Image (cartoon, rainbow, N blue to C red):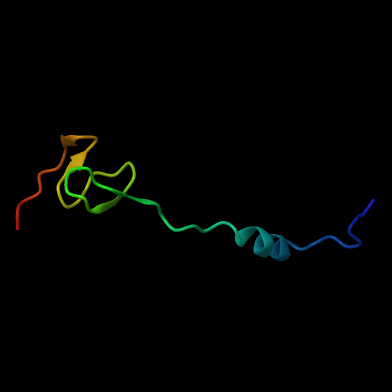
Length: 60
């Protein structure tokens, strides 16, 4: 059975595990205006969240 000869340091463990940690945020299309929005966030351009108006956004 393969057993490591020496204990691996904390920095080596963190380097190995940190390689898979970061991922780009998933952006979805807003059903009202079509802009890209993170999930579970009200759309900053139109103010809709789950098919209802939750923010007052002034028209530019």
